[in-house]
Amino acid sequence: MQFRTTSADETRQVAAALEPLLQAGDVVLLSGDLGAGKTVFTQGLAAALGVAEQVTSPTFTLAQSYEGRLRLHHLDVYRLENLGEVLDLDLPELLDDDGVVCVEWGEVLIPELPRDFLRIRIGLAGPDDSPDMRIFEVDTIGPSWLARANALAEAWQLGDRSEAEPC
Picture 1 (cartoon, one colour):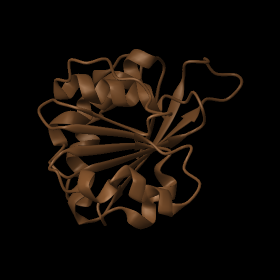
Picture 2 (cartoon, helix red, strand yellow; picture 1 turned 180 degrees about the vertical axis):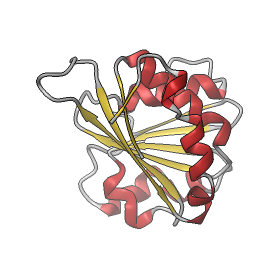
Picture 3 (cartoon, helix red, strand yellow; picture 1 turned 30 degrees about the vertical axis):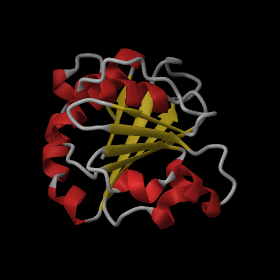
Picture 4 (cartoon, helix red, strand yellow; picture 1 turned 90 degrees about the vertical axis):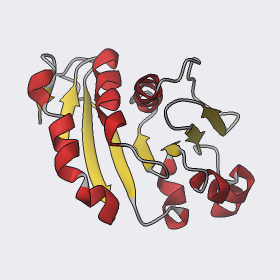
């Protein structure tokens, strides 16, 4: 699945549309260049989950947890250099606590993730496009997310967001 957004607010709306489909134990893996909108996406998801706190990038703390409809664990593993450092994050415990884990720069964690996760790549638009445009590529990994793929596509139907454009 691929689509684009044209503003940070629209990126937050895309994340909010995902919220009703989330289940305890879900993992959302976010990747993309610096400034692509990974934290903006997580902010939209947190708001939709009912998190009242301000969500910021946990680049230096590596992990932050927030209370909402489901607990949200927001990780930023950009600074991790090897899989051994995953143990410092208590990833297995975070995956087992019936919350949702949202991981920025999570490619390094793929070998440690459960067999089901949602991978979202956020790309910057080309030089001729608006600087606020983002291109999303979404992969449903594993049977749980494959079973929700149609509902996910419906949640992200572009006709409901006037600024969004299909790729």
